[in-house]
Length: 415
Ligand SMILES: Cc1cc2nc3c(=O)[nH]c(=O)nc-3n(C[C@H](O)[C@H](O)[C@H](O)COP(=O)(O)OP(=O)(O)OC[C@H]3O[C@@H](n4cnc5c(N)ncnc54)[C@H](O)[C@@H]3O)c2cc1C
Image (cartoon, rainbow, N blue to C red; front, side, top):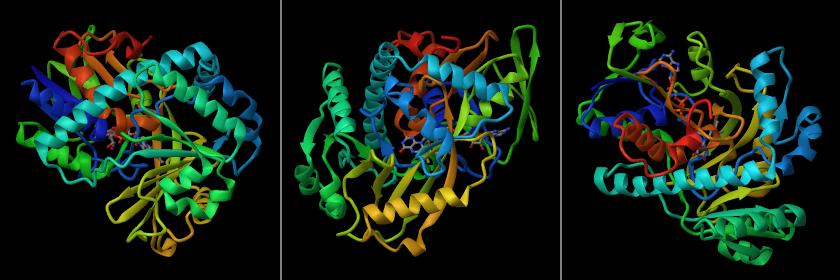
């Protein structure tokens, strides 16, 4: 089958790779001169297969006023005159029930475990160079209530196959000595030994080369502008390099999926959650963490990527504008300096901003639309790197009408 994949982030490239391995003739369309130039470029680098619990949870409800009124909150909401933003927020609030949060956790863990297995296969098969480490993850808490909720979540996840340990503050610092500076504040942490970290940009570029070797036609520097349809079939993708005809089309346009599809009457509840990252070159071996650390208090993640330290955080629900807010970068930098003051040369750091393509229930949208040959693989929010390979496999299995390794209905558009 001829398949046209739209979007060259980690999701589009993983999809193209999986489809080419299935024997399809694949063209990938990307507007930049290389893949992974947007949200997949400098994200948090966490392959956190066991940290997939959705943002929509009853525990966030008391925090809503803080999100609205504090500029220093980890999550910031600026209301817009935008019906899409309000619909997204209403759906998010509807998803904030314990039952839905638990069901979503179970579904995302299934997709996470599938993705981890596939990642190990890719690592074996492709010999990619992307600073991949299996260094485990430690989430530290500075308040008893947050730690108690985390222990309850870990207990629930243990019934679903997750291996996680609750540690007291001293054990957290013993596991990651670079935490010593805030050791007195840490009340405890959840350690997951099997978690991984890696550079998403290097991974995506390496996988794109592997996909090209498998026959994928990478059409870079090509702007996609719309789809030509005939009845309930898509005939061609319209691009700056001309029309591309294919038997099937897969939309992997990240946060731009929603406006692109809206013109066709296809509704995907994807809204951008802006975030930021800092990258310290030549991270200090003593002062920078070697395990992946999440500081739950500030909602900031730290991942060692070779010689570098990647620091990421902030969730801004502030509209479609992808530009950086200097105040948010300054806040993230201050929090990182306070937590790991000796991590490296903060004056030499690189800053970055990206738009997480988020759905209200934190689950990606994977499957067919009412156009018979138009497929979606988008809406991965804060977990696109983690879930990329499993999502691509699920899409390829759906397209091939094969038996699915996990419950596909959980991720179906219009669920
Ligand atoms: C601060 C931050 C930290 C994060 N940390 C993590 C983490 O630690 N672990 C994790 O798993 N995930 C993390 N994520 C989430 C992850 O980065 C995303 O889920 C993932 O990158 C989404 O990939 P994508 O391919 O859907 O989107 P993108 O990477 O945005 O790809 C979409 C592509 O479509 C292209 N495109 C769009 N419109 C057009 C058009 N008209 N024509 C042609 N091409 C077009 C874009 O150029 C882009 O390359 C983080 C995100 C942020 C912002």
